[in-house]
Length: 259
Image 1 (cartoon, helix red, strand yellow):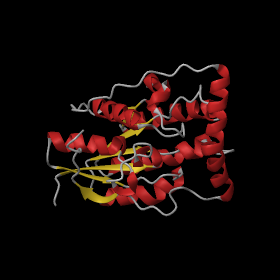
Image 2 (cartoon, helix red, strand yellow; image 1 turned 180 degrees about the vertical axis):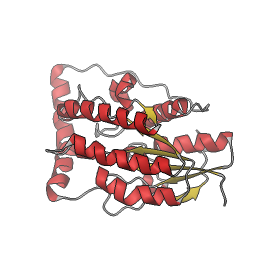
Image 3 (spheres, rainbow, N blue to C red; image 1 turned 45 degrees about the vertical axis):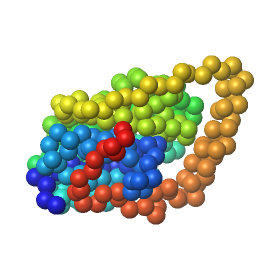
């Protein structure tokens, strides 16, 4: 199928769609980028969609594996978020990180595509991950400068305070739940000045927990999710090592009829 408009999504697990589980989709996930593509195609059937993002990818991998591949697809619109996995490492040079990112954004803009980038999430209240808040704040300022320099659109994920609500997150506390992906898709479409037909779900009531109950919950999370996550990094392996991009060439995708 030939498309006159092409949306290409680049990045890591955030853009692949981890946390928005759907066995009917490649790699078993849907995600905000799929949801954005569905809305673009719903409004205008000329849109095709490719998603090159793979979970676990660090910034240099996203730049090396995905940027040139995206340019070859002659994109109309590119969304890219990279660097989150680097920020979580024990040591990282944020200036060098975003310097490389800046060059990638420049290459995408030089293709003639509109480019949309994200700031990082404010993890200040999160156990363990909250320790990276200062790094993320610096990263965000440099990303804002890069977006301004290259005329890229910006979704300020840091300022999406609704996402401080645990109900927008998967059980691993690192990836968004379906509700979080839906909220993000609506925000992206808002920044792109596009209408959407996404209805946000009604969230369940927040459970009331005693301090002891919360400590037990945190300990269970550490055993089931944090420990394995740290272990993979110590072994130098990634959850995305054996995965391929969901949609390596543009396709038309539609929202499920029941949603």
